[in-house]
Image (tube, rainbow, N blue to C red):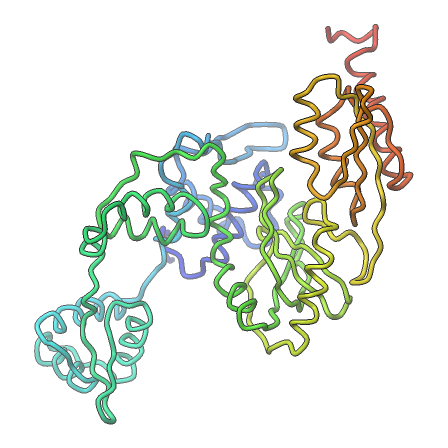
Length: 417
């Protein structure tokens, strides 16, 4: 029977488990139905080995719930980076790594045939040329070695670029790498550079550091490539609420990556040709991205996208097609304090704010999804005088929420004081 190993062959599978059980969290073993219980136990043990000090265990009548509990504003290194350093390798992988780097250290450059012969002569191991060729090609793509064509033969040599030399060459570069290792899309790359150079971050802390983004970063290179090259992509999007959800396949033209200022979640804004509409997909609900053929109408669709984008209060394009209509929403606020008026002016986004000069102001929003605006408007509870427009369902939901809060906090027979 194969023993347990912390190393992984398929990062996508590990991403699924970490996302479902430790990010969305609060699921129990009995809710796991995708594979065997043994598979779940192995994946859980891997995650615990990476995140042990950040895990929280809660026992309930449903069973033991496991989730990540961490104040991201007090950590110097994203613990989820550890998953990227756990890829498994074969015996040949590890042997060839040391054989190739050792012989190229002593030789300026070698051809494929010379490399194979040198390995045989020095270490007494004969590899197939194709095996060595694949490893040399892999290392050339990763920048570990360089390949130069001379006539019909390719010559390989160790890259002269050394991480430490580059960091020492430019003043302030170490601090820049350290800063961006915990932010933006540079995270895992910056963290890898720091590990190679023996650096540690003991300077920078980020108050709102969305550490889960690193599990989505693996999707970004192909998405960005598709945008740059004006190509379609295929991917599967699934629901986070159901562990047995197999997801739904989409063919789409990616246009931009959105980031919600309210939740920190990231979204892929894309055009779905089969539905003739724009849609925003949560990145943490997307499986592997596959690059497809070029889109001949990319420029036309992109122009329509930028015409539609100002009508999004958040990331949603609503349920409309590419030529959809908006739903005006008018909210009147009590603004007898200056900071409320200043906040509305700062946060109104695509809305139009009118000061009525009587201690009230009116915000008019003409957006695809007024429900997004209502989530934000509720942060002004107690200062909302009137809501007009939108849909009846939105107004009813708001009134129901207010009545429910009144029943919870203002009911004289309630025990809560």
